[in-house]
Image (cartoon, rainbow, N blue to C red; front, top):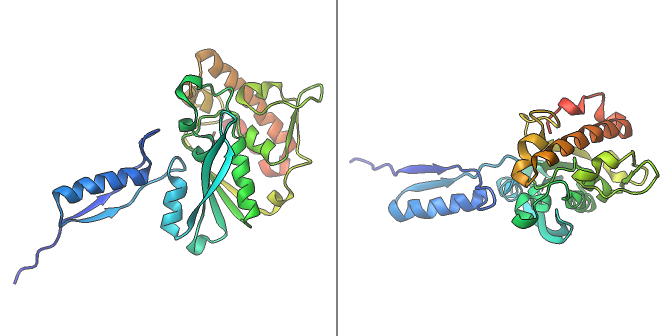
Length: 259
C-alpha cells in the first residue's frame, strides 16, 4: 500500500519596507498556498535582520512576549511602539526594534528630513526594558528614519549635549556638528550593569563613501548637500563619543566601524 507524502512548503520572507512585516508576508503567502494546495504542510518562518518585525518575530520564536509602549517618535510626536521580552534560554533579554520608535514608516512622506529626526524614542524603550529588570538588551538598527548617531537615545537616557557656550543642543542629525561636549553625569546608572548589544549592518560604515549618511540618507529624504553635512556631523560625533565614553569605546575607530 503506497503512502502519499504531502507537499511541504517553507515560507521564509523578510519584510516589505514600509508595507508588510515579515510575519504579515508569511501569513499572506500562506493563505494563498492553502487556497491552491489545501493538503500542503506549510511552515511559516519569517526572517528578520534587526529591522521591522524583529521584535514580534523574536518574541514568538523564543516564547516571549511583545510589550506595548508609548514613546517619542522620530518627528517628536508620541507614537505607539513596542519591544520584546524574550523567553526560553534568552529570559532576561529584551529586544528593541529601532524601527518601532524611530522608523522611516513613522515619518510622513512630506516631512522626511533625516537631519531633523531623532532616536529619543529608542532611549525611552531602553528605559522601559531597564524598569522591567532587563540585564541584556539587543537593539536592532534596521529601517530607521534617523541619522543622529543615537544622540536622541543618549539624551533620553540622561545625557546632555552642550555647545561651546554650555547651552543644550537638540539631539538631531543636523545639530551634531554644533555639539562641543557630552555631559554623561546624569545618565541612568543601571546602564553600567546592563549588557547592550547592537544588531546592525556590517557592510556600511559610520562615515565615508560607504557611510550611513551617503548610503541611506537619500532614502530618508536627504538632499546631496544634507548628506555631506550629516556625514561630517557623524564624524564629529564619533570623536565626542570616544572622549565621553573611553571605556565603552575601548580604543575602537568609530569612523571605520559599522554604522
